[in-house]
Length: 469
Image (cartoon, rainbow, N blue to C red):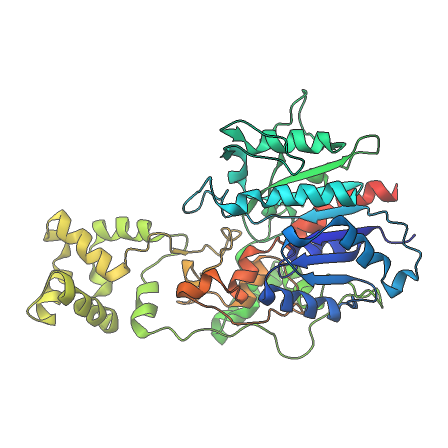
């Protein structure tokens, strides 16, 4: 059977595409506006045998500049089809950028990125695929827009839920949204999926909207593709521990418990080459394992965190235990003392150490001040628990501390927690900061923004299995 044809828009570095390919689709068109993410995407697809202009078409472009005519013409001109493309696309996948909908950080009703889903709907109306997938953050469910105007100029009233707009717009285009509830309206809360239930070693919830043309078979229930046992952090990255003794001990425990399957699959590859039909496995050195060198005071600060604790948890515990565990952390003591000189003032480091030693006798305000000096005011930092899936992978590496060592994760470790194969190489700068973060998409951001491939695979299979039938 010829592989069903798929399009991936807002493809980023290629997490969604990776799962689409694993499920069995042929991606014939994809696009993203980020030059950095595009480098990674094209490199991976060349590696997989998807050659631009021959059997697939990729362009670095903003969706506002894409038209259905351009997309379909680009596909029809591929050498692979030899002018035999009939214009039929089986499925289109896309995750319009979600910063304006996100519950993490500031939410802005006027964020222009909120309107990119309108452009996505416009392209759908022009391409007319049989099936549509739209991935987004859970914050989408309670986001309202004012004076929204659809691509065909229908005006919506103030404070209209995005979900109401989507349901009406899809129906207007001739699509039903796959429902998991009784009744006429879609219960969008039923469309929330947790990636950890599909083999991804990460608790990551996303809204997955799957729509299909009225009159054709509806997709299967994505929940049918859940796995029995969730994959934990130790089952996914123990072989990447730097300390040899800790690494060998962890791997021995996992081998005894027959828990090395995820690590082995990551190394051997899950994604097949277009040409050979065989998985692309890692060859040579493991990519993206570079780490920043932490200053001694940072390492000593990280050492204060127990597994599963956030900064808030550590502060709460130290308020009861005192700061005895900090006494011998000379680098952290001196760093905190030098910071204190700029704020509250001390006559000497010995005076500062005295307050550290007598922490429990100080007044509450002084206790909080010292804790902020020792731990910083960053309350989102967490040391993850090896016995559980990771928390949602984000774009900043210093939000999470490894459960095994006093450091942040490498790009490769974060990619593993997203379920990327080890042969998948992330290109561009490893990280960036300051004003450049608004312009550049470094490796950490490419990983954090990606749809986990194994979640994408389950979504794609729920469509492909119906097409095959």
